[in-house]
Image (cartoon, rainbow, N blue to C red; front, side):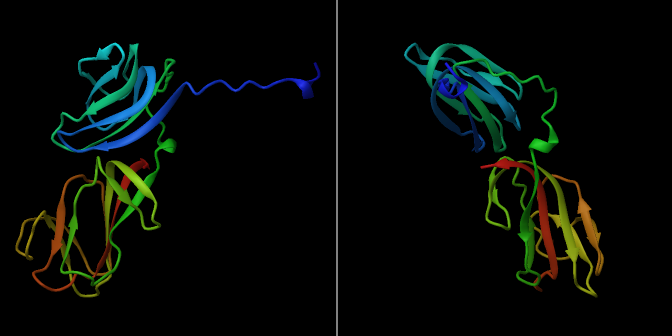
Length: 217
């Protein structure tokens, strides 16, 4: 048989990778048969159980880089036992998933900008709500799942007003603050959590964004 006559046999798919956000205390189900489960990415511990002909297994708490294998299943239930939303990227299939990486390479998980407040003077407050563990849309309309926030970016384009980065829910300039953004300057704050800009009624003359380590939705 010549090389041109050789038949190329394409093996059946042995697994799939699925990424899902799970709200605090909620569950979701991944459809697909297999015998092995591997947690590629998890922003916090996740409870996992399989369902198939042999019945439904008990929940097992797994973290990133761990998995289970055994009886054949048709679906996998994921339960978030945490008080915050999480992102889980899970591999399910009929073979063992091999991952010898000690740390997921940063090159495979991009840093994506979320346009928190893309138009200056558009509102009387700017609210920075940490999107870690949830989905978001970038300024170009692409969908992402946020693993964790990398930084808050605030560009003060006002020539005379200093804005304060305040606690979440602030209603005026007298609320406690963690930092200041002086006129015609910018700040890059590598922090998680929720914050606010509010001067008590006037529109906020800044451009503000957040950077997240994220995977495609």
